[in-house]
Amino acid sequence: MTALISPSILNCDFGHLADEMDKIATADYAHIDIMDNHFVPNLALGLPIAEAAVANSSVPCDAHLMIEQPDRWAPAYAELGFASVTFHAEAAMAPVKLARELHAMGVRASLALRPGTPIEPYIDLLPEFDQILVMTVEPGFGGQKFLDLTLPKIQRTRKAIEDAGLDLWIQVDGGVSRETIERAAEAGANNFVAGSAVFKAEDAVAEIAELRRLADA
Ligand code: DX5
Ligand code: ZN
Image (cartoon, rainbow, N blue to C red; front, side, top):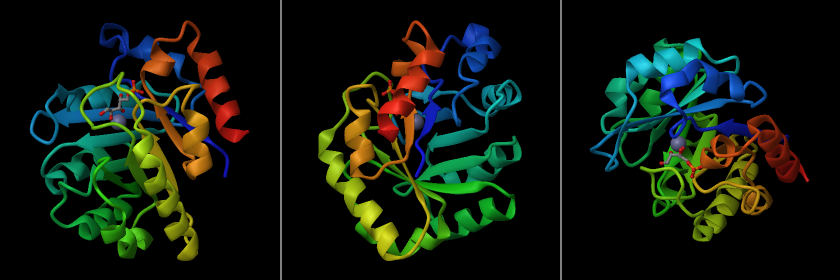
């Protein structure tokens, strides 16, 4: 599976959003983090900024909803033109119903798990999804350290997908860098969110290329 690089704009310069989106034009997806200060202890973006990000992106966008009541809000993000919407298993009231609603809108459905949430209760739901996001930090902030304790869960998720004969992507998000991306790829991830690694790099294009090379090796 070819590696996909999805820069997170959480810590980009929002005063120059269009320029920041241009910097990641060689990525595979743009990762847009939405936080409500309830599901996570931080507040970030909302529909108007997400809409501006999508409008200024030359690559497809994935919304990562770190919010309560995704059942209520996810369709509104899908309507903005996101190619993929990720919501958290811990927050969704009816994850299968919501995944089907997103599919009916032509959007990829992705289920996210906090570091402490096991995959096992969700294995039967895998056929309803296009992607599982295994969080590799506690959601809420960029710039945190990659949690190696999530690697076995990535492996178990990849095995469950293969055992079921499915074709889901596994995304990792949090602390992904040149130092950690190979470990995540070896464990079975193929879609890599990187926030600070890309936006703090002097040359975002070179950083994206290097992350892709390391993940594909
Ligand atoms: C954190 C967000 C991430 C964040 C990653 O909760 O979901 O997408 O931007 O940032 P880095 O790559 O700096 O850990
Ligand atoms: Zn994210």
